Image (cartoon, helix red, strand yellow):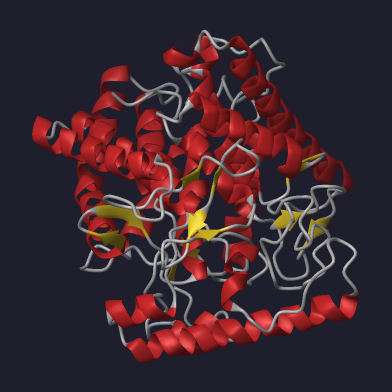
Length: 496
């Protein structure tokens, strides 16, 4: 990932390291990694936050910070292979349900988050091998040594997921043991577990309903975590309490299994091991793309070809294998998959254009949903409408992958629409970051996709992964995407 391809990336990453670590040193708090923000709410280390921060550093060639943070993340891996969602959080978030009931004594949680570690390792590898001013032979050697050092931890990580989180031996979709494991804690797709929530009326929902639902969400999290703690790690009991096959979590997993195959090859592992990861990736990918059937042979699929009057739609599945018919940014994450069908890609583009696109990014919940809360009316109930920059970034990376697929090259109209959506996402992210910079507004945790209003600055100030907007794929007008620029995207290479 050269800094020339991402001319603004270096600004974002340097701010991330210098601003927050300077503040951390002033407070006497220097843990050897970059916490997600500098206000204090997220003072510990968080799994996918750290992965995104490392990617920002890598693309900016702030590679030392990337290596430092990544190794700190892996250092917290448990003997089982699990990389916890949270590390080093003991005593820092005492009102959070996880802290009250779900934390281990050492401040580590016992559940995971979307597994971006393989892609992150590749990003760091490419940054190491292309270090400015470093002899290419020395840089290549350092990059290879990095992969060899982290490879055993990555093997344990993806082995744990395959063994402990898949639905079963012949059903390779992975499940979330609680909503927080998806990274989208309070998303409306999990409302089916909250029978006491009051019906919303869209963005204009009265304040008393929003406040009531915030309280109900908090109480439900406490209740769920208490029940999970009583299960005491029993997998079957835990799955009876909560289990869901989330689309985004599975797409990130499949994409990263392809990345594991590439890492294994670069690290000089045997061909059988490389092919094993390809097989693992394809197995999950094929099941995601497979049409749902009431009586499936093998694992259940996530593609509902007859939904939306025949346009088709991807849906998450509950513990019974039934669709969770909520529309969020998660529904479009199959764009990360290299073998996505043309009709499925058309459906995703239509869904983005009709229901998720907004002036300042993506709404995390469909704009026409009664559960849509873009103005953050339900305080502390997050992922219900406001834009989170990581979702825009993931979709943009996926679009770049689709644009570069040779088998789609002849479908000019489809590629053109991919370029137009990509252009909107990259333009929106740059615009909103520039707007905040001009106003002196710190990068927020999330923002209103309609107005760009920043949220939660009283609790979370200067949110690190907002810098993903500085390292989006090239911000190009439609019809100007070139192979020379495409090669810099980590997901643009279709796995063999």
